[in-house]
Length: 400
Image 1 (cartoon, helix red, strand yellow):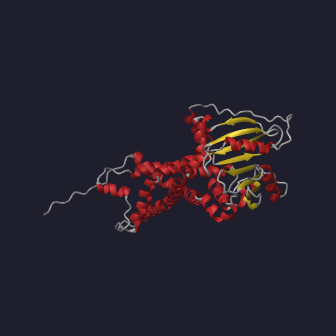
Image 2 (cartoon, one colour):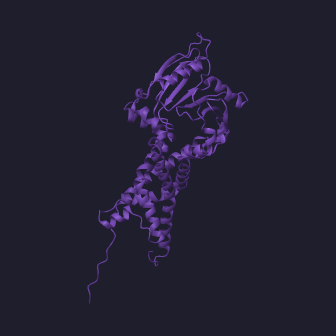
């Protein structure tokens, strides 16, 4: 009689590993819908700039005259306010170094601060695009109901204005961070034999659905783990004040908040020329090498005119800020990017890291695919769990 082949038993998992696996399963099921929602809305928002510029190409891009002479900014501001009507005041302006771009003039007014829904928390949020050379309005848009603005707020808080919206997003994100880490523990190959290497790093496309689904969950999850972790941690900076404070303290190695300059306009000094145009002219001279300049008119009293110079056509982290006297246009203060401590700089990068824009188009492409895969993980994970559940009910059924 031939010797009986010894039965190979699976190695027993440690108690910690069993607890980690159990938490990975049930926390994944509990947070799956929120993670799916965040992944899908993140995908949609990733290329919002490119899509918007393609759809509204005629309104966003203008013909450039030979002399490149622009209409005074104060006149363009008045034109925008006239186009808006209803006594709406322009509160922020974006001008571009790119000669063929229309300039943006925006106005915003908050609604009911206690409103539960996003739409009720905003009275109006309008945007006017103007050809800076001719002064012609190319578009007036209700940004409150703009598609990508709604997608952004869905991603931010389910369109909920109450803190509970961001808390749901935030805690689901914390769970997602745990799932990423515990998933890597479960994925980690026991050794680097070729068979284990292939199982961990390659998708077996020719296998049956059950195996392909398993690989889609584990292999793709591994490849986007670092990117998803970055997206999750930057999301937590907005969701939790304590986490933002922690990031600032760790990066700056200080518990002292950054000092804000107390700069005021002098209402006793006035000039005949338009101070807003003077301030913008000085800002253009100062920000010659910057990609765009944001201007914020003063609100009266001792408030100042703000001019923000941004490096990058769509990023927000690398910027300098100028403050001007609203009555004379005199430069009162400048804060450079280099003046910021490491905590301020890192918090300032948070948005651009989160959307991938900090690395340009390649970064947004990575964020898109990472978000898409993140959205798929709850689905593939649920299918894995459901298959195991059915197998336990029917132990006689062989593995596929």
